[in-house]
Length: 447
Image 1 (cartoon, rainbow, N blue to C red):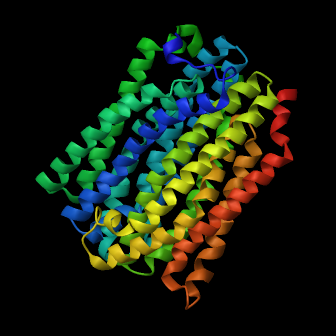
Image 2 (cartoon, one colour):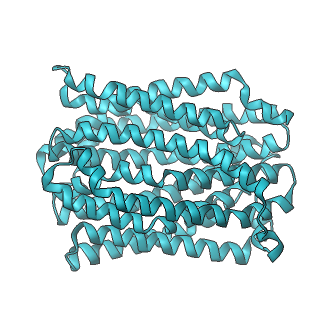
Image 3 (cartoon, rainbow, N blue to C red):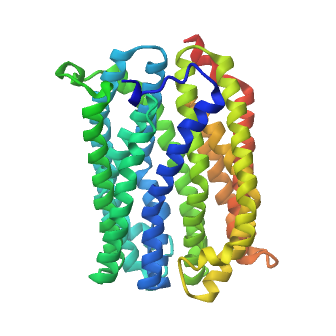
């Protein structure tokens, strides 16, 4: 049992956070390989227009998948609180009832995204030369929402009880499979962007099914009987009440990214390709922050369940220290290695130059980005559902409010696209710290 659970209510917070974060960093980086490999292979073997088509769907896919991600996170938070409080029977009931939540949300959002792909992409002024490929890629991605939902839900549950390693193992296998399928489908079979989308779906499905089967065999909390699958409306409501604000948070962020993407699209396919490549690179940079944030969420959830406020506060201080160190390490990489990194994606000199300069701009704001993840992880873990919604609003205001005005300033022009990203991180980071300082997250202890 101890091999597949971890009690974070006892022991050194720094060691616990690092031991939990590091496997997730590896796992999340491998997960980003799905996007990176798609982009590299499509950009190299099909061309910059095909890369732009894949990139034009990124924010939209995030928008339609956000409900699934939010529900998975909400389920994980509720389970971590049950675990910290020692309510092991409720942990099992929550795992069983998560099936109903994830199947309904995944199928609904996948169908909606598939139907709306073309009209929404047209509405966002997607360049005509990449529209058909963008629609095709998005529709294929939407067909795989259930696989993505299964993996994210199982991963969230395993993390909630302290197991960050099992999802990692299956992601590594799936990532290498994705690389092989990408090369075969795109380069070997000439399937273009469709091949990249199919390769990702197949790989995610294998990761999700494999992770679920392993959990049933090895994790004691997945040893479920028929009685656990009885519909428990109280647990479902708690999970939904936590998951919906997280989904709204993701949705609002996605809406703001879609709005920014519509501004990007007006600059032509070269800028879209550069924006896509820098976005993929920043997704990798964000993985240590994301992993630390998820570690903070589990840590805070378990300790708030155990009614230990001071331990939550100590963990936050240690998490911020880890985040700052990583930010300082990444800054010179982005400042001086932009061009060779961009060359991994495309061969066009114009796109490479655009992307390298863009990375120099956004890297100055990495500390604020890290602050968002660490603070958001803690507040989500403690059950501060209102913050999740407010944080989404702040990020939406930042991207939508800055995008058009900045790009219209002659001295800034196209670079305003990336300045928007950095400034949004600043206001969202400061807001999250303010929310933490308010202390409303402590109310869970009194309930």
